Length: 211
Image (tube, rainbow, N blue to C red; front, side, top):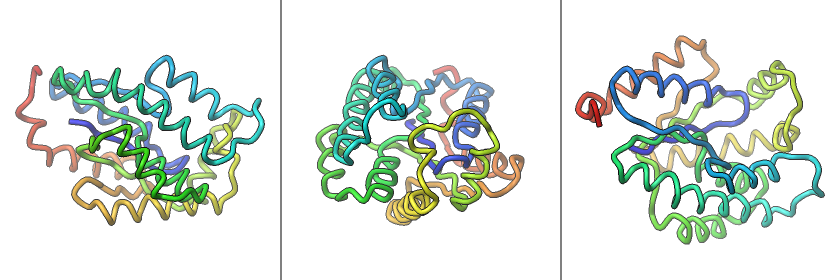
């Protein structure tokens, strides 16, 4: 299975990906964890360019094309080969993030995103997408609490993240069979309980030990 983890900054999606990885390990399922942008040497270089502050501001189409360039390399060299070998793949962000950040956040034409999605993915999509949802204010307060140096996206204003969140929820509504929306404004224990409940609903979890 191909499982993706989505949400705005500060909602804990990376923490929950690690939690799912531990649950799969307990179940004896062989899996791969990866992230976007990134996942490959080329992708990680592109990620560094996208998140750094040392370049002039990107025009939106440049940012969009860099995202899909990294994704093309990622899908062809890491994700699809792993799935063909029978591994589960857990990915921190995927194409839904592009619709949310570049579409909702940046205001890019969604038809342009759909065109690139068709070109790069050829109808390939996640089996399940966990969307960790919380108000933008909550997520940004958590980011500030981490300390460190915020990346280029984390410096965006709250209205940017409100648009991103709204787009994520619109996609969840449009693809209800694939999305599992988790309230991330709950305790860690409650969130993990909900995630575990979703995992238990995967029939394959009990059938694919020792893959």
